[in-house]
Length: 199
Image (cartoon, rainbow, N blue to C red; front, side, top):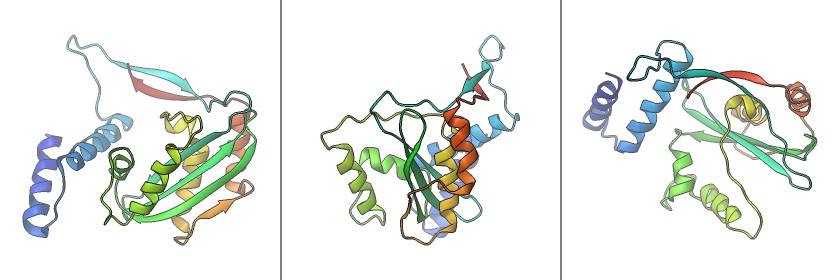
């Protein structure tokens, strides 16, 4: 039912608003709504045999190995405004703050992440930023990209949400803002948070 509604909505936006969207946009919206329904407990995952496939796991921020700097980043999108922002933090193996950043990006959707991985057209408003990220990833240094749940990325998530309140200039955070200090302490001491995930 959800995919039918999203397809119909996509069709109407094309016909009535002359808005061109891709099938990837429908897929991303489907995943977004599906995850929201699951998190709200309104949708249960069941197997063919009827067994529940969810389990609770404990998640925490994981420090890097010695002499490696870990950069956690996150993006934020506010549904009510369509505003998007990002934030990140640099930490050492002890969880000590080494720096951070926050940036208001304008408006958009989660498909912008795909532009970083798949490529971007030069006329896209975020093209310079995306090309710079790809250039940084290509440098001669050890880079490992991985995904974590929000519970393991709370500090970057808080900074990304804070970035919505900024102007469009990048904000360099030499010291942890007050709203980050408790999360920084929690992460350094290894606080675990529970999350229900599909198995």
